[in-house]
Image (cartoon, rainbow, N blue to C red; front, side, top):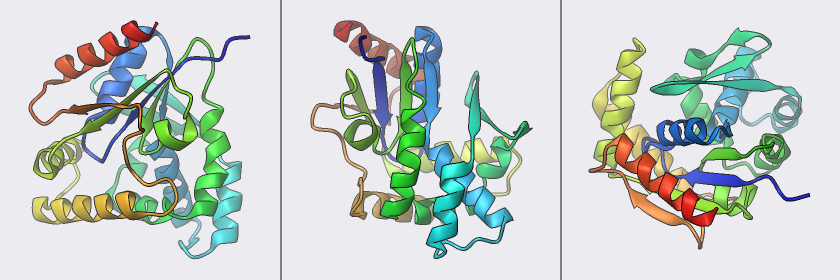
Length: 224
């Protein structure tokens, strides 16, 4: 039996991974994995249960037990469904994002979520968006994309996304948080943020969504 094809899209926060990944998944008729949402869900559930980020045993147990579903939607991150409830907005707060960024470097947490991520690999194919999809989770992916953009461009995108959802956001503080998150993602010992050796690197700073989607689709078609 042939392996289920996978397209990985990695990159820092605000580079457009989710938007591009959803659009390409829809065009291909493939499943979509927003791996960053898994860490945000874990952070959100831990906060609700008053589990701190230094309580490794309870965090590992929580990471292994929860199940979520992604419901793609046009022009926005996929809806995240947990126990029948839409928790999409709850996990997109800066509080959840900040804790998720603290949890992500912990090797035991990453290992606990690794198998959960790989379970999304189902026919006819999977588009996986994250920070280590092409390097660690799906190293055998047929096509690997690494999206990047300047911090200033990325913070403007993130700012608009949060404002559109009704969140009160400070632009300067958001830029500082994104730079700090980049530093942690790149500097962590386990699965640091970096392009896979065989990844196609696309800078989206000056590109529209349709341009990036078309380029990714061309790369997938070339591999087919």
